[in-house]
Length: 179
Image (tube, rainbow, N blue to C red):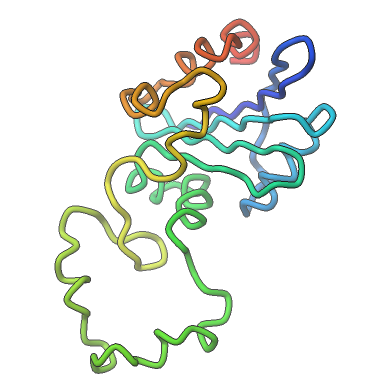
């Protein structure tokens, strides 16, 4: 089960709204959703949480590229919304593999022969696109630093972290209202 919420920063503090992710298929869709909730192109945080598995944060400010953090990439990559975030963070699929020099096997391996790096990837999992997905956090670990949550505090959070994050931002009441 997923929980998703948007926290939009305003002059008066934070405004929260729960959100349906049914129409979200790409990071661009998620970013557009966040920008629609923005007040004067100020900060909007998208919280996504899959119960007892992982949580993700997307920070959108104006027209800047979104900043993303995922608590457990391997767990998130196995879910539809988590895959959107991990694909962006880990490179994902190339829309046109013919443009990718790696597709030409210039690394000295035969077609279908694994690289040495691929053989050493036992600590993670194969992701939805067949790429290595590390277990553990990925993304911008300083995503909330300027808002009062340090990198160390963020990394210490486990599942069901959104209330703690909202509390550190001074937005616990508004997040709880939509939960």
